Amino acid sequence: MRKLLLKTNGLSVLAVALLVVSLACAAVFCSSYVIPKKKSIKREPGLPTITLKAQKITDTLEALTDMAFPGNGEMWVCKQNGVILNFKNGKQSNVPVLDLRSKTIKINNGYEERGLLGITLHPDFKKNKKFYVFYSRPIDTKGFNHTGVVAEYKLTESGPVDPNSGRIVLTVDEPDGNHNGGCLKFGPDGYLYVSFGDGGGQHDKHGPIGNGQNLNTLLGKILRIDVNTDSGYKVPADNPFVGKADVRPEIWAYGFRNPYRMSFDKVTKQLFVGEVGQDLWEEVDIVKKGANYGWKIMEGNHCHNNENTPDTGCDIKGLTMPIDEYSHKIGISIMGGYVYNGTAIPALKSKYFFADWTGPLFYLKQDGAKWNRGSVKLTNLPENLKITGINEDQNGELYILTNPDTGPGNKKCGIFKIVKN
Image 1 (cartoon, one colour):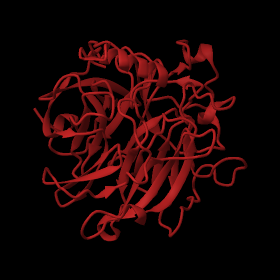
Image 2 (tube, rainbow, N blue to C red; image 1 turned 45 degrees about the vertical axis):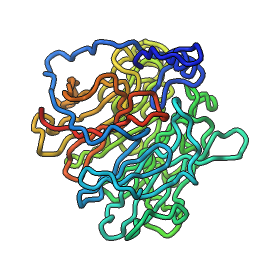
Image 3 (cartoon, rainbow, N blue to C red; image 1 turned 30 degrees about the vertical axis):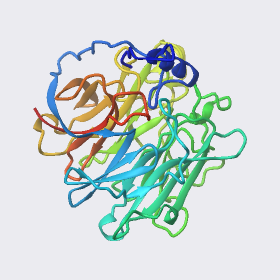
Image 4 (cartoon, helix red, strand yellow; image 1 turned 135 degrees about the vertical axis):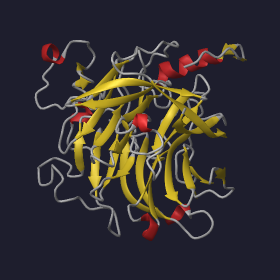
């Protein structure tokens, strides 16, 4: 977090931010209690830095979380408060696609992880006009903070979509306000993949093994469901835990803390996820059917809460390790990203482009069974911006969402397209 020198009622903004973080973990997508100082990024030996350019589309919005690209020059942008904006050929329309503020929880300024978190288009969107959103709604049940909702909507020919016209696909009650996941992606198989965090708080203190390892809850999981039905959803027959006692059949993979963003490589069909760590490590995983990614046994390649190597500190039998990790000396909250399959930036071809919330950008290049990490430098991008999302359009070109602060409460959030330098 950058240092702010403004004063408010005798308290520096930095002091206020420190108090907020100490009480409620880190800012919107942050994973650690510690607000890091500006740090020099450790360069990976052997891989060159790729220099690209950030082409500004706008920087006058508030708290952006996700995007969708329906075609015809349109770009939909989710605001955390529940509004989906529509841009046509780079210009913002006065009419939103959908306004869910009557459904979503009222979000806080500054620290906030709830709200409208994800959007995706149905594979047959051009025909059926269906799209799906993930949002947080209020809950009155004691012991829970809010409900995570996956809902289906249908685009209308004119005017915004009626927020009351949605079909609720799936709901999950969540005990705390953080670690919500919130990513929606259709796989090459036509099924909807949904990410849920471990239910929040710190260190997954939800029962003796935590929600991440508990196969009888949807929290701390990536789900795979069939939404091609008139109500609710169906469970695909080939899901890995179908027919097993005391296991939720919707689960595709488990052992996650906060799989905030995931994406499919359009060429290899592999599912990549950026898994937000606790206090020490951030990781990138390739998600496989039925696999256990270790939380809260592991954080990255390390035993949770210590820096011992896995073979000396905890039982790693049956766990799937990340393809990459980086320490909190480099960044503190991974945003995930995409394997680049566009045509405008040859230097990124087939590389996994991703970011940390605090600003560093990286790429992973595969070398046999190993993935090596290099750095990405963006010119024309203002300093000290948080990166709140990375998105891919229908042509495989990439965009980043930015925020100069820790969360909602300012109207200086931006959208930048990644182009050749």
